[in-house]
View 1: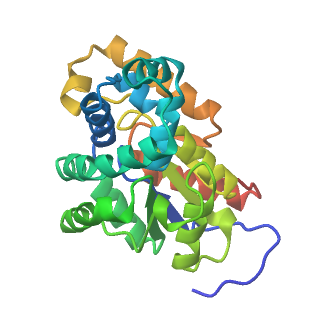
View 2: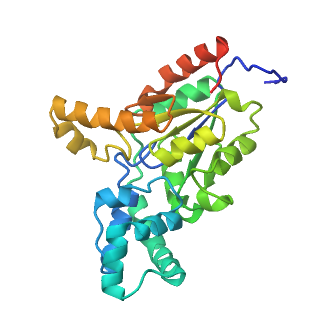
Length: 276
């Protein structure tokens, strides 16, 4: 396909950049949560799943820093160790975290329902596919291979450790788009289940789509989600939608299974002259 410069790009969608955990794999985004909780438990400062979720989407060493800065966790650390966590403590925690995280990721590599069908739709439309993550490349080697075996194989995979700054900075998304040789940012979409991931897409000048039910904002296994009453589901869904919308997401969906309809809606808006 040949692209020429246009002041007002009117479509079609050129590329979609997906997050990993909670977006295309690991329904409920539990691999990082389980890993952070285990890491802090082993270091005698237990944290809750809710606390572990607050910095979700950020690079993992930065995630540890943000956890240690939370007032309750900071106080608990001081009570155990007599002082605030130092840079050396953070480095040690991160090195301990890596194998814990790799094991947790390898236990949760199944594609979220609808991911393969959405990927096939994008391939049929000649829409380029990239992905990025708060994980490091070393953490996701097996995940990338497993996803490919299941039918999801993005042409570009960028990790937070591949760029100068992770989310909410736009570096990962822009690196994806450079690798994909995309001509116009106005025709590209970032799909993510975390607020930093939505902010990343907005900072890169992209359309953004938040994923609510399968991801971090609801944070539940499919069985646990399905066990809720319709009223309970609607309450949690609305809370997740509201948070992602307030973060600036142009669209919010339950899961990536609903993305094709959003792509068509975005293309209609671009054709009418709208930009992200």
